[in-house]
Image (cartoon, rainbow, N blue to C red):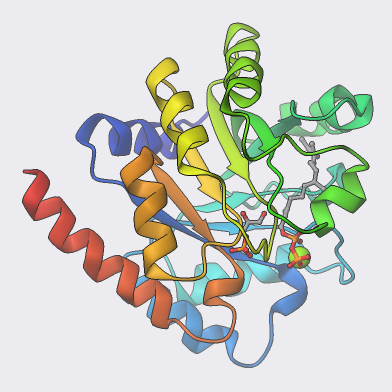
Length: 252
Ligand SMILES: CC(C)=CCC/C(C)=C/CC/C(C)=C/CC/C(C)=C/COP(=O)(O)OP(=O)(O)O
Ligand SMILES: O=P(O)(O)OC[C@@H](O)CO
Ligand SMILES: [Mg+2]
């Protein structure tokens, strides 16, 4: 199995350089996508995450082809809401187990359905503890998963959950306040998980301004995921990118 994406994530952690993933919903692919992708390529976005809670078009393969054409070299990582969002054309898949919830289908069920297909492919699998944190509003993931998010003001519950996932062997952790969340994941949660776990920490949900992104990085996020904040224009991706350029010079 390949391991380029995992290695890149781990090297982001080792070097402390931080990274950006742009979340693209395949349903949002349209006539503007080509130029948006070219911009992302020129900004050296670290990863493109592809997926959604609910997908209404059957266009994952077409989306991957478009991304490869206009943003060649940017690793494409599936961020699937369900097992039907699998494509062996992607570079890697976040093999998410929704450990904040108690829905067996999202802890292990979908995984069993897709595992034999994954085994026949050459895709890289990233075993990921996916934790939904209350972002102040019911989001699509919350509804689709039919699970209760972790509270945003009790870091100890999130730490216990992440530790349990770590002891089960999960290698990457994704704290998500949900797409469009009014409140991103609390810095205290990010900080306390980062202190306890040596694993790469991905944070997303409601990161729609440079201030919110900076707060996530400063608390300990290794990779931030920006979806809605990059939906209409690449302005935020550009701002985060130039912030990181300065940050990396200062960190060295
Ligand atoms: C391992 C495989 C194949 C599947 C795992 C399936 C699991 C555990 C899913 C977790 C629950 C879930 C529904 C996750 C979806 C995460 C996601 C891609 C969110 C992207 O944002 P949206 O929720 O689509 O945002 P909008 O509502 O703004 O479109
Ligand atoms: O769309 P936003 O709010 O950036 O959220 C991204 C992602 O973490 C949602 O699963
Ligand atoms: Mg979506």
